[in-house]
Image 1 (cartoon, rainbow, N blue to C red):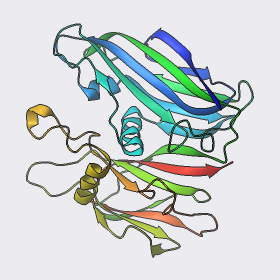
Image 2 (image 1 turned 45 degrees about the vertical axis):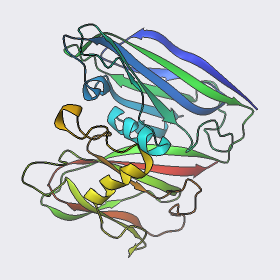
Image 3 (image 1 turned 90 degrees about the vertical axis):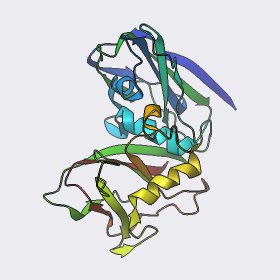
Image 4 (image 1 turned 60 degrees about the vertical axis):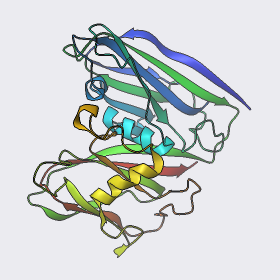
Length: 298
């Protein structure tokens, strides 16, 4: 087996634009997106650096394979790989260069010839990246994008990751969210606006229940504060314990894991189901971002 790691976009000056790029034709393990820039007066925060990228979309002939905002891609990297993405240049100095790289995955494990995106024809597979220049926090910014192809790989499955905007309900309490049917579900990433706050026990979403054919399955009202605790199972605990060290990373995010051991034992089989949905117990009547991670058979 052979892999090819090559440059798709090199030292590209970031602009406020939507840029569409053709992807390679060989089977694709993953894409690496690196963004960098110089501090403007003070140290640029992770949130400010993530603001470079509004969204990343990968499509084949108009069919969506991945569509995530940068915050959700960061969170997926954390929970899928059990490591936080590297952020270089942790210095609060004007014009210090800061670099953040994110991985766009097509398998739960990288470099896996059995689980990656299959080979395609030239021009069929594309990536669209929507960027904004945050000039008040970083300047002289550039993008570098690389791809990792697996030559000759004939995968049996690949990862599909799509973020949904779950619109704000009219009131707090239970609301239903229909999930896709047909593929195995790997997990759900929930990113909220309201997280830990003063004088309140409420989150944007207070609890999560999974329903398959109108019966509770795997998760029966999992509390958000306990799901936050699950982060310690895959990451190296808290990134800081006092205010000056910043919030938990990934921020405002929990992962409902249907593949905790990475062996497929607990994947949610949706093929043939009449309905699969989540019941979100809303602590605050606000919009929520929900990313569904699926395993698609080729």
